[in-house]
Length: 158
Image 1 (cartoon, helix red, strand yellow):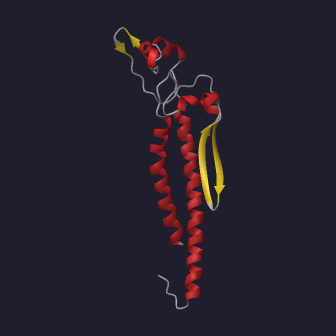
Image 2 (image 1 turned 180 degrees about the vertical axis):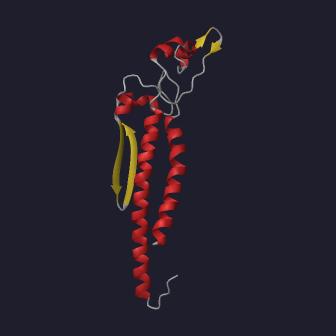
Image 3 (image 1 turned 30 degrees about the vertical axis):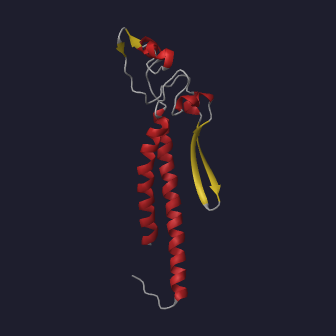
């Protein structure tokens, strides 16, 4: 461990350490954002065909259309995620934006397609909420925390 007899040397050391840690955290975040984007892509890459959903009576209906998800008195249960690919437009519209606010970098995952309404937490007027953003956040939060811990450790160690 370094010892400093001159306060200017200590200050210089602390500034360098702070800069290293900041760079390391930025690199860690960029790597995590790539993994989060891949997880978002996976969550909108379901493979249940439209014909199968039609045969099930569209099990994601709500309100008046919820009865359509039943065959007789049996409710067909289908996992709401991943969201199925219909035209592929939703999946193609997945974007990650990097924004700067002051000294802070903000990463934003979003869809630019009009079909992005199916990712709404409340669903649509005729479709249940699919839990897309909740699931993505459950994946992202621990990953980001881990990456930031690793980056901080790496930045302070050099």
